[in-house]
Image (spheres, rainbow, N blue to C red):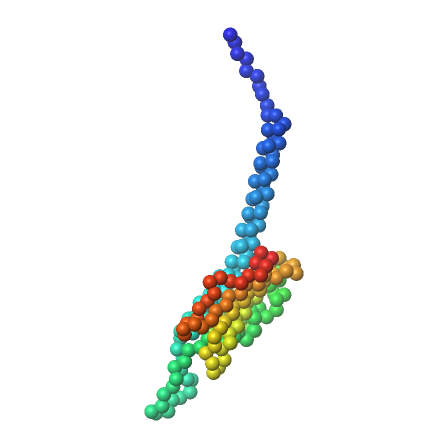
Length: 194
């Protein structure tokens, strides 16, 4: 007995199932890539705010004394305080980071501009600067004064990655507890994926 094998193709239903599976996988891949890219763009803000928070905590641990000459047999009070607020956001204009990146001019003390981190009291005190192009505007706020230690800080990043009317805001807060700066365990985020 001779068995003849017939050439058989795919049915229309089988082809439609394969096309449907490929379409679902493509949609999932696009969604995943968009989420990945959005998270990658906002990682700059998260990382920078973490550095500012750690710098503020370290600054509180540094002890400072009076900058005036102490007379014989006198003493100076050793003080600890939070860094003063930044004198201005960097960059100063939000338009510098709306849909674009801003390159600060960190020329190590020569030719600083008002949009450089080193010329702003708060950023210099927490020892924070950006040397690569930045996508966010940064701010550091403290309730410390020249005469008081202060009790709280906030580090803020505002961005507009794609240049639309929606802004992303990231905020890290901290409070002095038992003579140490305690930072919030996570950031406050508004429109992180903007």
